[in-house]
Image (cartoon, rainbow, N blue to C red; front, side, top):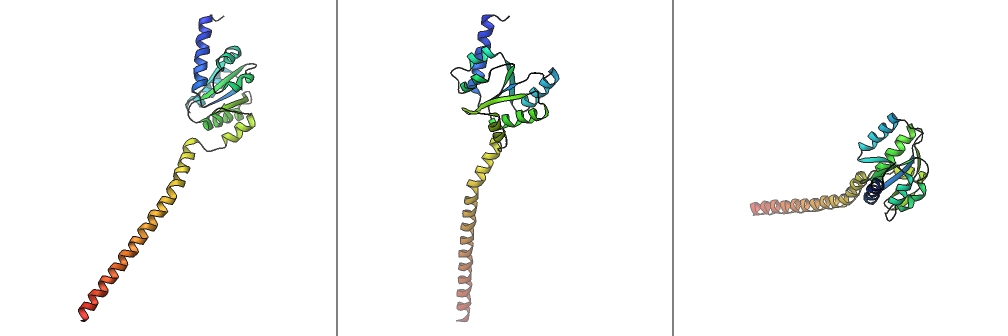
Length: 178
């Protein structure tokens, strides 16, 4: 049995993880063996994510006054929480990717950037491009009109210089005829 001090430390650690996460997913893991759990954790760790098996009563206390407080009702039965600090889309992708190959991992739902998501909504989120791809697309969209403008400006200047060159050669011809 855990002492009160250890329980307080665990609640504080969970509370901090809930505070710092941009996304969390709650999932049941009943029936998963140690090898499967390790495979799952390695997959998440490779993507700067983590999965923690939680005691429901401690998790319910830890989630209070955090941006992810809406998951409190999901803490029933043997559950764990996957945490992501950077890109919540990758969190949803990796968990659903593992859940497809292992039906013992049963998703309950999650919170992404303060909004509650059902399992179906998490599937939709997982189909989105990652944060880095979206930023690159946005940069490309911003950059496109600028490069077109630069090209048009270069074209206008080039045409002007060709016209000046033509005028200069015409004046040179006229001066030689006279």
